[in-house]
Length: 456
Image (tube, rainbow, N blue to C red; front, side):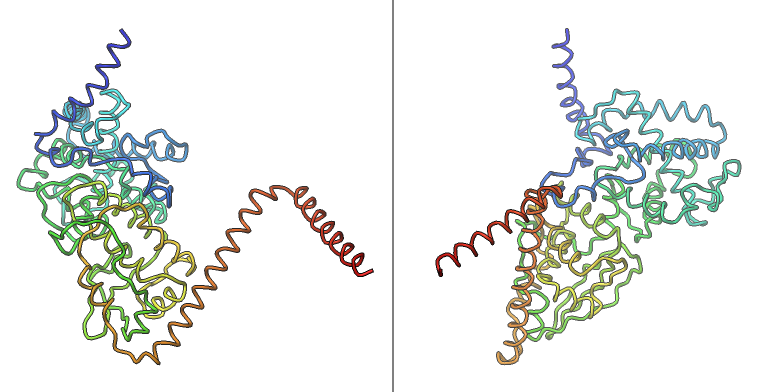
């Protein structure tokens, strides 16, 4: 009997995925919420894991620090229901509809969800209601004026446990951008239609997406279908469409210092968005001047960029502009001297206490494990690699200084790495340190005794 149940269990995930291929909302986004590959995760495990709130089934109950937000989820859900005319009957209707989306939801997660049907529907209903209520509380006044306010549950931002604390709110927004911490967008839209049918109509199908982009301060766009929050933000960010996909490689062969030695002037260009976690892809090179929109590096920059890259690497047929952008930056920075030059020119704006060496490590590892990129900067890199407008005699001192700095950094890295191995493997405690010191002293005394004996 158990064997029969196991066989039907593994076959069920296959049937779920096949059955969702023709689903109107899901057919283009089967397995749209995958686990990040181990080769991408290796560089920074924490960049893909939520810190405050879990969304969806993948991280539910995995750590104690995520449980603190569960109570607030329930309170947000209650507040959302009290915006409707009949909360009890509305909840019953929403539960029935969400339960009917079980196969489509499982297909979005690749069909490998450990929760049974009713528990998964509960997660979708709770997390979807939480997200929708948060969107409504943060919505601009003129976007959804028809939806009534809920005064009985302390909607004021000062008493709100999330909106009343800026750092917590920003951390939660960051958790919403993690690839593994998403929920299917069609669940959110379904809930909105069920709760407020007069507002979220078929003519206003874009309204949930508008609320989401407004929450993150991203430009509003019109797109036919969306997989989840991260996908929507990706669509709102990319500049060039239809770029050719190819194998990932570092196309820029000259770092910032070498470009300066070749006569290239690196200059920042003002970007159109004032949003901190916004990446300016409009990089241009003309008449010896390389113009780059400034990149504000804050605590969340790495998380955003890594998860955008992970999304691009998990799909076929989408733009990989974030990946190409990160590879271009990696080529631009090969030493601390390059970081200093870019900071001095305003291309890199450090909004945190991060050091130049940490920045070098960040951009040196952020593309490790990527397989594909597009040709967004192929022509740009080709022109930069070939450009030369400086006399070799003027170029030589800059390159020599750069090579010396690289040698010093390599020696420093080797010494630091060797020291860590020594401490970790050979001197794990103070007694072993004393033993090594005594042994070294005895060895020195033995050598001295041998030397003086030979002379005598």
